[in-house]
Image (cartoon, rainbow, N blue to C red; front, side, top):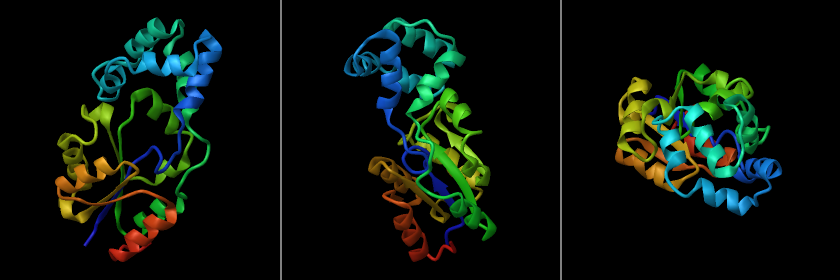
Length: 202
């Protein structure tokens, strides 16, 4: 029997498009979106940031060197967070109902300090979660076993009593290897059906 329902954040709760952020940076420095994408992806800078290996100030300073801008963390946060759409892919009623029916509800996300601090107050749906398992706090990214172990620990139940949904198939496979149940996210209706088929009261 499932006792804990775990959701990914990006493209499960909040849709995003990196192109929106790149366009804002392009307006600042005149580089094309393709050039910005290439310079950001030249090494593992984003991975190091999202796994908590470097602080936001160092991340922004390094991006500034690569992308020819000089902004504070506060100034850059708005541009970097422009990737997020203002709506959600699932309604707040889903985690709210799950909690009301006795399930523990967690967030499990590859994210960073800048993005999550920006998102947290802007999406009230996150008020209905019992806890957040974030890569930059755990020090590991999905599909590392370390981050699933952290989620299971925070769930307070056995791995097979956890259900996880994520838009990336490899991350669902990682959850299954950790002993959890899971389904790749496609839509709100699809996840409702998946949960109901497992006896979850939604």
